[in-house]
Length: 370
Image (cartoon, rainbow, N blue to C red):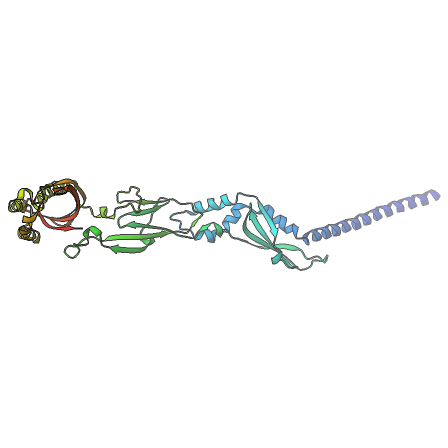
């Protein structure tokens, strides 16, 4: 009997220890679970937790994706969307860092300035939520903003070129939609002839393009043949009115040089033969033109000329312009050597000569000195 009683007592104690152990483990597990929850809630109530989590997942691609509005402002004819993204990615190659912005922080909200390298590129904000069961108010990420507008080259590229010339930026030729101004003026060479003929005007077109990211673009001015040219003070705008082919220019050049030789002999009263000189130059003139009449009227005054003979030294032809069918303008400078009482004197003469074609002959209609 005593042995049986001892057995029962031993079994009861064992069950007690098992139950006690289970209760202890349950209570310990519950305690640990509560403690772990408490620690998690405590950590969540510290601002650095969501800040570090945000910084760990932040990538350059994410920032660029959020700069779509900035990229949309760029003229993609000149700087493609892919080019813009690559520029932004290059700018974001530096290490991302952050700094708390004290002036924008409260007890329930904190804002951090975001940098790539030393450049500020945006900010992000964390805020507290309602208190949890442990009495802590967790901080959570609530928003971000990115501002890389400092890369925007807001000043538009402006180029002025004559009509018929082109502006090319990054290989794209600007069309009329980029033209902001068109101004017209008379060509200096033609200024005395606009009332008589339908002549071209000097037209300047102003083009504007942009904005761009950074200053990463190349601009080039192209002439009508597609060749690069420099449009500055050295550009002779009167070359724009050259419209004679090579054969016509060669014919006109020969005629002008021959005419000037005889014309200078006439004006210098060579050999004291003013009437003979007149009839020698007359075949080069349009009959009954004002020029022919004025030269005839000038003969009387030539009897007092003291020159011992004038001759053309050099002829420089600046421009040939066809002003109408069979009507041409020659802008020429010729240097005359005169032998008079003072010996040899050189005179520079700037003249615009109107030449007409009558049949198969070229004739001088008028001359204007300037």
